[in-house]
Image (cartoon, rainbow, N blue to C red; front, side):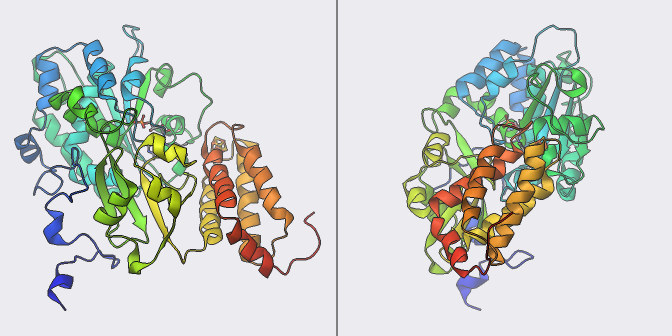
Amino acid sequence: MSHSTSLVKKTSHGANMRPMAIEQQPLTAEKRLLLEHEHVPGINKIDVYSSKGGYEALKTVLKNKMTVDAIVDIMKKSGLRGRGGAGFPTGSKWSFVPKNDGKAHYLLCNADESEPGTFKDRVILEKLPHMMIEGMIIGSYAIAAKKSYIYIRGEYTYAALAIEKAIQEAYQAGFLGKDILGSGFDHDMYVHRGAGAYICGEETGLISSLEGKKGWPKLKPPFPAVEGYLKSPTVVNNVETLAAVPWIIRNGPEAYAKFGTEKSKGTKMWSVSGDVNRPGVYELECGAPFKALLEDCCGGVRGGKKLKAIIPGGSSAPIVTAEEAYQMTLDYESIASKGSMLGSGGMIVLDETRDLVQVLKNLSEFYADESCGQCTPCREGTGWIEKILHSFTEKQARREDVDLLKNIASNLQGRTICVLADSIAMPVESYLKKFPQEFEKYLKKSTASGTRV
Ligand SMILES: Cc1cc2nc3c(=O)[nH]c(=O)nc-3n(C[C@H](O)[C@H](O)[C@H](O)COP(=O)(O)O)c2cc1C
Ligand code: SF4
């Protein structure tokens, strides 16, 4: 084994990880605000986290008796947008919770992370649990919530244990429980483990599940900020969103807003998988070029192959061609200008050899399986899409199936309770529009005769 290969760590499934020497320091393309201390030994423990400035933000908030309005104002000024998918401004979301309404309020941390291609929250949950917990306590104080819950994906056993342990430490240190730091603010935090349903990541589905019901989404309005968990005002925030809160309070909103673009502030964590040399989780300034992530962080396309396409923001994001990707910067607006979305930041890289009809078929199986079945267009439509895509790969597609797919995709959108239906409809439309030749290849091979009845 050569010296350079011995530096490359292998995961249990054999994938190359970042070389150990590099792992200790940020790559030049990275801007590590949240992940600054990711590799500090023991950073998951409260004493090490505190030695790096951890819980200082909470102390600032509570000891200075900061008002709710002041905290919300800081979040608004920072420009932080929700990192769970929709990119909704966090400060505004917190400001929608009614004040002095006499009701219990709740903060729910969405740690369901089930979207194919997305695994960035896991790094925070496992390695930096106190950063998220600190953000949750500050967020709870800002919306006057005496209880908060971490709804964590069932399969994240190790992460759930790490969080449980960190919560215990926070209680022992007096950051949770009664009269936190003598402020008069009481707060309890709980972990709730999911049971493996993607739909429980949708905020109203999550709330239903936490209430002990089927994880079925609900029509909005009412929005959770007004009527959420147990019919009380509730904020649902993503893990990464909440983990950004302590940094913003400690360094000030202006410092955070200095990074990024006009409308996409700060940094974003990207989980990159697929055909790259170094898959993994990277934090970059919003507005960084896509090429910096692909080449500097991920070591380029695996095997020296050419890039065919990327799925930028989790599997529900429409596909982006290689040409578009290289023109793109990593912010909400630039990705939207390519007809896609930043979403969760779960990027899937596809090289020139990838068969995109197979990729789409694979995704369609996931969405058909995960549809909760409440809405007819989603329940039936996701299954139809899956079946038609199967007919392509089994050489049984007919020419009219292209229009049929377009028709189903268009009829799925905007007609359902939640956007799971759109999450497969939009990709279908984008693959057909940007890569028609991939479907044509299968139509030429098809042995089907007659028309579909
Ligand atoms: C089908 C579906 C699954 C979702 N899964 C997640 C998830 O796993 N984690 C998450 O944070 N948001 C997920 N979301 C988005 C949430 O509904 C919600 O917008 C988010 O948790 C809000 O947090 P943020 O404002 O901090 O982004 C999902 C949405 C849909 C439609
Ligand atoms: S769109 Fe699909 S997943 Fe969402 S509520 Fe309707 S049936 Fe359930």
